[in-house]
Length: 341
Image (cartoon, rainbow, N blue to C red):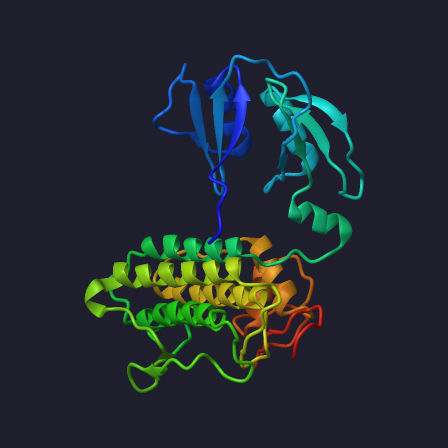
């Protein structure tokens, strides 16, 4: 049995006031149970929450424990300026132009924190590939589900784009894709020559071969629940599986990052199939497209429109100056060459 970090606790003179600063830093909010003057205030955030506790003693020496902040949607320098604007002060500057190093700040009561480059900025500065993560799976599936919920079309039995499958079957198959990739990461000793032996089969002749099917009586809302649940399963497996794990895929034995990228590509591309028929807009984030292209299609063109390149790589569109792809295959094996190909 293991233990988890429940809270990171910070002693302070004004719990509610300092909690407000940290809520702004983390882009989150205070617990609904807390109010000005409370001696303990909780800052809710993914992972371990921050608990601010009011104490009578002033801060007298450097903290033996501090937080390292890594911005997700801005540069390190932009984040430093933002935090200074919120009331932090600069203690020491250890930043390097190549993305290494950090800036040490202090919160309004003098508690130290460090600001580092985010993963995307560091990858850009060093010329390395930004990995595909479990959070990317969650993002792709949430964007898909949110878009599908906005569809004004009641009949999901119309064909999905150029596919022979209906919109219902395509969304159901996407749910099955995500489920099956999660399942491949489940066994302690995954097979390297075969899928986990669920029984796959079509619901009708010419339909997709699935292991899991949605209950028709639940309607589109229920279908989207299965899609969301399968996406959560894959994200959870990618997050908890050892990076050294290898498991079978028909395009090559893959690692957890590869299965994450496969699930994202299935989501983005099948949403392209569904979008026109269900009368919804679909233009996924360029960064997400770029990360899965780098992982699964490392030889794809470097054109600026990454979504157009991903559609081209999967046979869903034309790309100026490049022949149309009629039979596509992704690179499932780890790019570092570890494990069997």
